[in-house]
Image 1: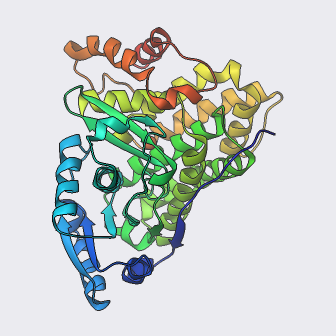
Image 2 (image 1 turned 120 degrees about the horizontal axis):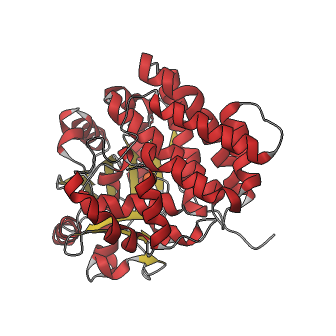
Image 3 (image 1 turned 120 degrees about the vertical axis):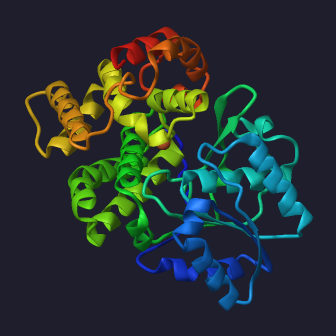
Length: 383
Ligand SMILES: [Fe+2]
């Protein structure tokens, strides 16, 4: 086996774990926290709740509410300016992937200077970042665990993948109680994102035994518990989705992803669509594309999805993909780009989008090398 590494933050998991946020910040030396979130989380009451927790511990804060979905370069750069101007130390973010990625981008600029686009790609951040406590309000993005940060470069209309070990936060807080205030749509979008992380990290050319076990466990938990979480909002099912998301995040943070995420980033940068809507459309198409290059591993995934196996790994893999398509269809989400996702007159943008996607860092670890023409063929198949 090749030399491998496995980096994860300290993870504080469980119902009510949000209450430990203040103590976590103190342990990291906080005197004046830089707090990052958005209006949705604020309206749901979680920002106020977090401020109460900080107040109880005697911690001051400066609040940056400038988070939007698909965070943009200028929002991150403005946040970094505010961080430095106010003499803040520990960064705490509460929210979904957008809020957490904004916080990570702010941490990079505040400590390394320059523009956020200077750090696009893998391992381009040289100086250490401010301490970070990231509190996730979804079970999907994995930004609270991972060494990834996705920021849109507005000028080029591209979602940049910034990947570096120093982006792993010091502490991740995962409180499944927060999921109870989420909409059904958001729970589905987040869970299918985690599922795509699990599948792509398992098939990645740099997966290891430490990531593979996390990937398979995440697939199993999402397939078994997402329907019940959506139907009943049972806390037990939501908690299982949180566990799945943490497992998938530990896997993809260390094994990276594949062509499906490369495409998802490129599409998201161009159309400003929500990340979670892309996976039910693209994931199984990319799996079929990869089949010849990862037959045994796709057989493993099929076995987990089906909870049984058929004859050869290839047969199991194909039956698993079919089952996954049924699974996505059961949530009544778009399964084709033409279903309210991309207007017919915008279809021609798929070519430049695929040309952009081949350069995304995630495409490098796809089990089957994918050219832009092959990516375009996949997108046309699911039009
Ligand atoms: Fe993702």
